[in-house]
Image 1 (cartoon, rainbow, N blue to C red):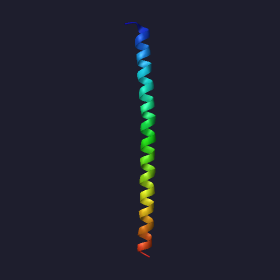
Image 2 (cartoon, rainbow, N blue to C red):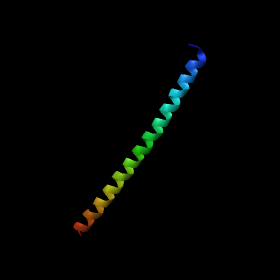
Image 3 (cartoon, helix red, strand yellow):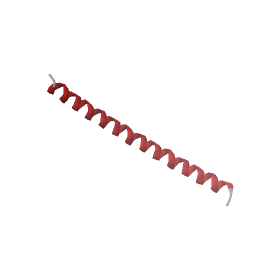
Image 4 (cartoon, helix red, strand yellow):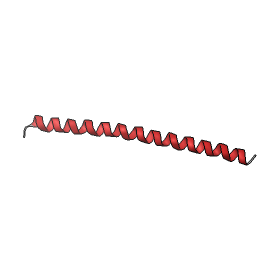
Length: 51
């Protein structure tokens, strides 16, 4: 195979990995925000129950 094929394949793989990394970052960001919201809701309930 020629060098152009290897470069094209490497570029395609790199683009795929970058896109999957961005998707993973979005999923992790969403999970952290959901966890934060849940913790804040439960802390609010905890404060109400202890007053």
